[in-house]
Length: 330
Image (cartoon, rainbow, N blue to C red; front, side, top):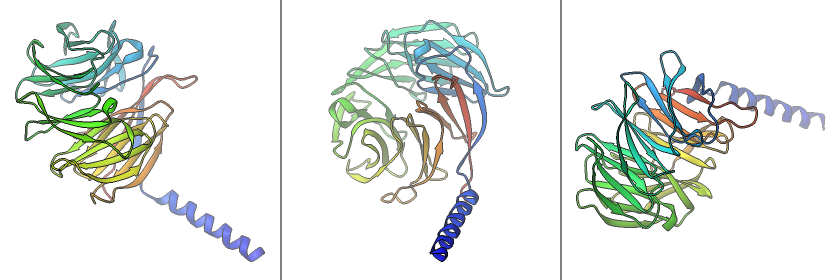
């Protein structure tokens, strides 16, 4: 009996030692306070040249501006109705914000933060993607994708979908756009030039497909579902599923790291999941980082190798941005 207990104790010690010495894949480096911010926080954008982070504080009705050099909140764009999607455009030095509360898409001067353009993008205006090369802005709404001119936000048309457009990705070397449409339990594929659908891929392994990332070179679409919580990998040429694995719950953002062949998923369950996807058919989780309940949106900057996590105010937990650094492959 004593020998069995001793062996069990030694096994636990060995396991604890192994866990303690396992190299981290992302490391928390600092926390930036979001003063006077309450409610849900949605997406973020980065101004690399100006070293600024823009945070769409949906519940607060504002866009918060973070100086990344000082690590401080320095400015605010107030009185917005549910800001959701956000992008920073280096060529025009403008901030593009989609507001779900009134369906508008607005452009703000990046220096003065004054509004310079506004257009009705559609009901529940949400995610924003910018095609600088062709001078276009794409805004998800219910039920479709609005196409706007980057200069002045003039409407150029829309792509009709089967429901509200959640996360979507633009094919960088082609004309396709991949869109999560959870209302229809589909990924819908459209041709941006023709402004029409070219494929409907039914999502059968899980429901509530919200976040999405694209591995263009690997021809893989990374789709996160919430019911149940799954990471799905879909081939972008055939539309067929490649793999399906469990992941963090209540996820709202996912990013693909081409350099390390990793995927970062932020979930409101209170974790960031890090997956190795170097083997397309066998993705496996290599780290689960505890964060905070409700912290389900993040931004991964490929140049600085920083991952910014938005933590909403809940009880004693203040609103803040947590910055993590991605560690090189071991």
